[in-house]
Amino acid sequence: MSKDAAPIGAVGVVGAGAVRQATAAALVTSGLASRLLVTSRTSSRAAALVADLDDMRTALRGATRPLTCHPADLMDCEAVVVALRASFTNTRATDVRMAGASANGALIAALAGKLRGYGGTVLMVTNPVDLMSRLFAEASGCRRVYGIGSALDTARYRTALATHLGAPLAAVNGQVIGEHGDHLVVCASSTTVNDEPADVPVPVIFNELCSRPGRISAGIGRTRYGPAGAVLETVHLALGLADGTTQLSTAYQGGWLGIPLRFTTGQPIPCLPQLTPSEATRFQAADAKLRTAYEALAPALQPIPSTPERNLP
View (cartoon, rainbow, N blue to C red):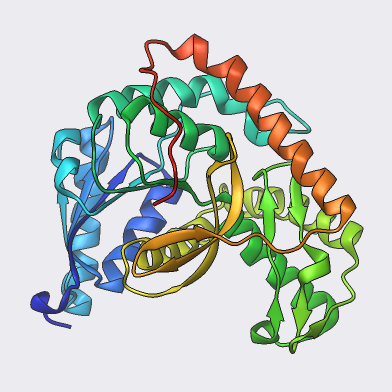
């Protein structure tokens, strides 16, 4: 692919570590942007990653040129992927992703201050992703902020259900919404296999969704390629390179949690399926949990400018 073939100008990636590296590699190989701008709190790590990615680009004769940048340079990007992670010890056995709320929240609030007024699309990877997405949106004033947690949960759900049923992955259509965490909601009642209602063993699949990230991390240190795939899918949809539906954390009825969004030429419309009473109860519980957690988190990260609730365009 020639450099002139890239459909968009620039995508930025912020943060250090495994997820950022996998995401950056996926973006370079996709060739969807002419430039990939990489920034990190550690400039030497950003430079090393860019050098490695540039070798990949050369080998593949790719369209996307990786470059180091300062945070201010991200203002010119069509999309920015945020994968910051603070150093902290996680001792939680449940609600594992919530452990980083305060430590990661301080980094996200600081970055949001530097990108206040950014007019592009922000894809949040940092956990707890539902809280961090809302925090970034309210601190920056950016109107297009999406957390990729439920998109990743949905991918894991379809993989797990296809394996359990012995069905082709392409035949499975279902989704996970709510929190990217212990209050995720499996939309079993609307799941189909070969366009027919599926018999979903919800407790079995729920346990698989909760245990899968830990098994991956135990084996290779951290999940990385699943989140990178969810980011790449969302970039295509949010920037209008493809039409389709995915599950993202966004503002919804005064709260902020994972819901299905149907993108047409980059514009999202919420499209929740019909939920059973038990699914609706779990969804409401996820909403209440995330509102309470955010109300406890946000005051500690002041000053955060007050902005009106973001409405989906």
